[in-house]
Image (tube, rainbow, N blue to C red):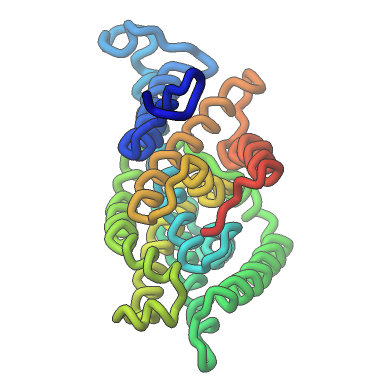
Length: 340
């Protein structure tokens, strides 16, 4: 009889395949649950009849919630992948998409567009927000690239923090001079997936797809960069080019998500850590699972925000912090924040 365990019987252990498949099963089940909740739950509940009967009273509500649900899933997935990429790129477990100035750049461009160009349509300021996010991220990378060592993880973090602080102060200054801008800007600034139609989703979808493809294709690159720049060069990697490609993916994903829904915090920070808590470390698995977990996080936050303070709604950008802070503190207390 094999040794070990009570009565000399070896304890049964989950196989390696079980460990690999469990995070995916958890994510898929959670995704199905939150999708159902998102289309059925709100200030007015929609019964099963509303799903199939176009003449049912809840059908119109359902049709309004479908694009909201899709946008929440896309924004969460984009921020989850971007957060995983950024943590791998900077080798910093506390890195967040906002670290590269993405949110601050989008906010500053939004304020300029509303205050000085007279933009009022979401379809128009979507492009300004995206361009602002891209320019800010490129500025961070360009400044961090100065010097002999190039854009090292430490320099990216420091320059990103400095650019974010500068852009945030300029945004506040413009708002003080342009009071009429505040009414439009504040609805975007808190982060929301409500009130966006299919046309808005269609405008951002190509950028999200391209960013996801670049990120997932570069997942093996992140595994190599995690070994250190010198070793990566020894393995034949062009480190500067690899960082640039991953940086473009982060800008496309986080910049588009920010432009579509406004600044939504904690998702890019928390989703990769939820994945790593399951024992997953390789970026070839961390990134797709971060997309799945990020989509679940944003959709949960949106559903809870609809029902927590009836008859009003709490915007998703606020709820992600409300939901994310306790979970993040639990990770800190348990010592589960592993290295990126």
